Amino acid sequence: MPNKLIIAAHSVRAYAQAANVCGYKVVTLDAFADADTRRFAAQFFQIQFDKQGVDANDFKRVFSKIDLNEVQGFLYGSLFDAQPDLLAWVAARVPLVGNTPETLQKSKSVDFFKLLNDLAIPHPLTHFERLDCIAEYNELWLSKRLGGTGGTHVRQATQARTGDYYQLKVAGEPVSLLFVADGVCAQAIGFNRQLVAPTMDLPYRFAGAVSNLILPKAAQQSFMHTAQQLTTAFGLRGINSLDAILHGETLWILELNPRLSATFNLYSNLLPVHIQGCSGVLSELPDNPLAKAELIIFADEDLTVPANFDWPNWVADIPYVKTATSGVNISLNVPICSVLAEAETADLAHQLVIQRAEVLKRKLLKEEMARKGNE
Image (cartoon, rainbow, N blue to C red; front, side):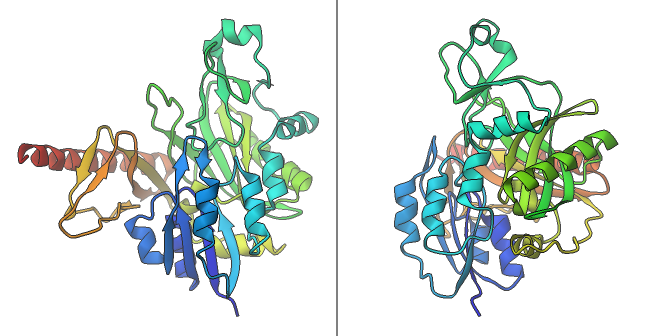
């Protein structure tokens, strides 16, 4: 029986770990090929990215190296949002364990916002061509790119900056719903707080999330009603997520991610749930009594992490060191690793992950200062 899974995402570690625990032989394609991913994968490939996303030619070149014998399926995360045609290329060669390329394309197009209007799903006012009011009152509007991920495509709308669409800025807390569907029904997995690490150029850069967030009852119902409406409209299968802004008890839907997302890692192993959902079966969800937090640590400056750096046991996505004597050079604003934490509540987990991040940053800074002092 085939037991090989190919998994592709911008960062694949969490999915590879889940598949490894389930006994699959794992082949991975992502931007990092970090040390943790290499432990969980039988084969790993680092693929090229640019500002627009994955380099399609490089992806095809690397994918062509994979032996497709005994492959059960192909799982994917945030890699194809802007290039559903590349996912279709994959689907012509190996079975997908997830939603179809057509579903991905529809959810990342103008048609998605038309559907929100048709279904009366609350969402920020959205325009697909620049209006005079956007140029005049640009502090109220955001410029976004269809298929953009990680928040790096979201900018303040200005006369000089263009995007695929413009959305009225809504005040509130960024939140998400992780859910599973069987093509007909949607089942909630959990509500999450979205974390950002803003810079001057990237004010909405995604930096992680916290699970088991307690939302107002009205917001929970709104999230689940929307998930069910979109499941019906698209025939969603497997694990999906919805991003939104919570203002008081009002929920403003931002986007649907009909694929594995970053919050997958905040719950007990969900891979069997995803696979069964893709097969049209909703299974019993594992218990998740604790809230979990994951925070991406970005480099505040160019730095070198020494090969012998003592990583805490609450760190994941550790950069790969080629030799025992070399370090890893990490450029400004590039992800270094992820910090993990868990606690009884979302607020406590959030506090703990921030505390741990500060401890790690001080430790990295100390190492960098020592290295420069020895030069």
